[in-house]
Amino acid sequence: MGISDIALRWLINKAKNTGLAFEQAYIDDRAKIQPNIADEVYNSNKLPFSLLGNYVRPVLEGMGDGEIIDESVFQRMALDFSPKPAYKPGNIRPGP
Image (cartoon, rainbow, N blue to C red; front, side):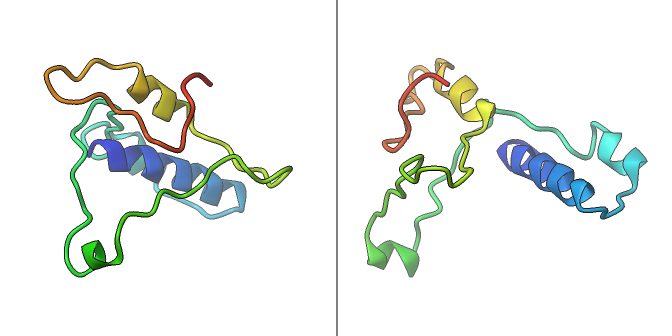
């Protein structure tokens, strides 16, 4: 539940468009899948991956590659997480 459910919903919708069937009652059950843009983000850059250093993936740099940024990213960037730092990914400019 939380931020990962935003990606789960996106994956389910894309898979449905290819004809994959899902148990719709399960998907519609809000107790099971609860997208939440305000949920806490955890630092998953732990050993052994932290040894590789930080990498910020460039986004929206390819022309015509079909890449988009989900609206939930901009919604999260607009939230106030005080006293914690704001959500401001270094590779995304504010505003949709």
